[in-house]
Amino acid sequence: MEQYKNEIKELFDKEFIEKLYFDNILIRENWAALHYRYRREDKSTKEKTVGDRMQFLKFEENNGILKIIASWTQ
Image (cartoon, rainbow, N blue to C red; front, top):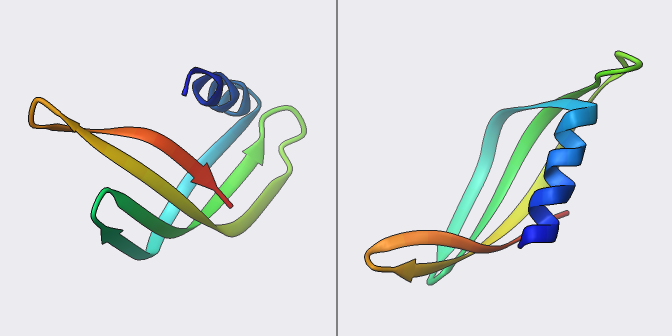
């Protein structure tokens, strides 16, 4: 999870990413699948792109609080 956090920090240092809206969210047991649209802009070149993504999250409950323990983005 620490590697994921570092990679995300590096990405956001280079790009501005905005989630525009969610198309679908599916939840089953301790998994969630999110399909969303996004817009991103490279901070140095100002190049803009739009697209859609799938993100998969795995949760774990700890003392009544749900925490994300794994995340994959496609």
